[in-house]
Structures are given as C-alpha cells and as structure tokens.
Length: 401
Image (cartoon, rainbow, N blue to C red):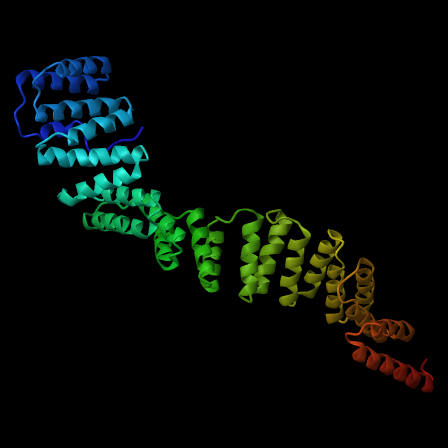
C-alpha cells in the first residue's frame, strides 16, 4: 500500500458552497466509518446519498470525494482514481477543491502506472499550487523518467532538492538516487560525478563508491578512478576476486606495480582472489615490473602448473635470464618449447645464450642453429653462431678446452 501526501478526505473542507444538512451528516458518517475501517457502513451511507434526486454539482463533488477516500482506504486504487476524475468533471468546482483533487489524482495515476495522465494532473496542479514542497517535483521527475523523457526528468528533481535546502528540510537519498540513474542513462558523466560525490559523502555505500569509480573510468580519468577504488578498498567495500583484480590492474596502469603485487599476493594467499592461471600470471607481471624477480618466478611457476600454456614457462626462462641464473633459464625454455609457444626462435636464442654463458658450446651451437631455421632473427642467430664458433676455437688454441 502507498500513502498519498495529502489527506484524501481533506477536499471536503475545500468546497465553499453550503451542503444540505442531510448530505453533510451522511458524508460525515461515511468519513468516520471509513477512518474506523467500517467500510460496509461507509458504503451504505454513500449509497443513501446517491438516492437523493436533486443533488447539486458541489454536493456530487463531495460525495465522489468520499467515494475516492473509501476506495483508496480499501486499496482499490483504480476505483479511487475514477471517483476523483468524477470530482474534477463537476461544473463550477471550487478552485481549492480542484487544486486538492488534481494532486490527489496525480499521485493515484502514478501509482497505477498511468504516467502520461499523472504528469498532466501534476503539471496542472503545479501551475496553481502555492509554494509547493519538494515531493510533487520528485513525483514529476519520476513520471518523466518512467515515460523515458530523460532529458526533462532531472530538472524537477533538482528543483525539489533546491526547495528542500531552502526550507532546511532533509534531502532524501532516493532523490539523489533518481538523479544518479537519470544522468547515468543519459551519459551525462559530469553531472553524474557531482551526484555520486554527494552520495558517497552523505550516504556512503559500496554501490555508490563502485559507481563513482566506474564513472571516472568512463571519463578516462584513470587517476581519480584509482583513488575511488582505493577508498572503496580501505572502507572494506571491495568484495570478490574481480574487484580486487581490477584494483591491481589500475595500480599497474598507474605504474605502481609493487602495490599491485602486494594486493594480489595477499588476495591469492588468503583466497580472496581466485587462484587461476590468469591471476597468477598478472601477479608475475606486477613482480617483474617491480623488479622482484624471485617472487615473479614463484608466481609464474604456480601459473604454469595450472596451465598448458608454454608462454608461462617462456616468461620463467626470461626472468631467470634477467637474473643471470642460466641453468634454470635453459631448462624452463626447453619446457616452453615442448609445450609450444608463438615465436619459438626467441627461446632457441635464449637457450643458445644460456648455454654459451654456461660454457656448453656444443649445445649453444645447436640452439643457434635451430634459431637460424626461422626467418625472423636469422641474421642475429647467425652472428651468434659465428661468435660461439670463434670463441670455442680461441679457447682451444689457448688449450683451455
């Protein structure tokens, strides 16, 4: 059940013409019965009024107002709306009663999802109402939104907020929430950010912080997107693997790989981040960029154990090479070649250099010879092969081999 902003029986006081005694008494009895929940007696009193032959328009207006109140009290909203429409149809209706009924009917029609008609009655009411409060403007904004007239919907909501602030009344969270939806659906990100910043300040919640971060992302403002995500994380609003991984990716984009590594490592260790090969690979990227090679290798090995992707073993080989640790480097490169990778010539080159550094010239020659078999990098591999052969000859001539 919903509640109207105005007392539905109040319009009985808005009529200036005098009611006959019998009409007044039965209307009073009907209203009292309705308020007491004795709907059968209320209907009985009103039906007795219906039998009067010479009812005047102002009396009919009061009777149908009472019917509307009764139907509303019984949650028969369509019948209530019909009764109030009958009130408005009466000739020479007192302006005060017309004004009251317009707003009452506008609310009922909105509830019945007859938004076009609701909007018309609300506009008619706003045209004559004196100093209306914020609620009618909110209702108008909601009706416009429901009618998909989004370009018009924000203005009445903003007017409602301005009225509330002028009167030192509390601005409801739902009003800003309506603006948020309107600006989001119209892709008005500048105004959306203003509203979201108010929401996270006055009504902080996980939903608003994540939406704020997303809005910064839509605008391409990576710095503020990261700041919003960080604040959401500090407030405990980030939940689940996807959001934590997103924050790690933002750290990487911001060239803060160590922070990304710490976040992912902690999440993977405690189970907050899904232990997939992709997430372990992302962790390895963070550690590599942070120059934390041992941690990078550990995460790469975990990722490789979860995948048949030879590219992971290739990264392990390269990371060992960066550390000058050639024995595990050539072993990892061999594993990568067994699993299969794009651009295998690079791994053959890596193995060749590793074997050379280890003084294993025969294996180095073999690796470079394999690299020569690929067009890309053939010239470099040939130079390396020639260099290995010269160095091997030099060492033999010196009696060192």
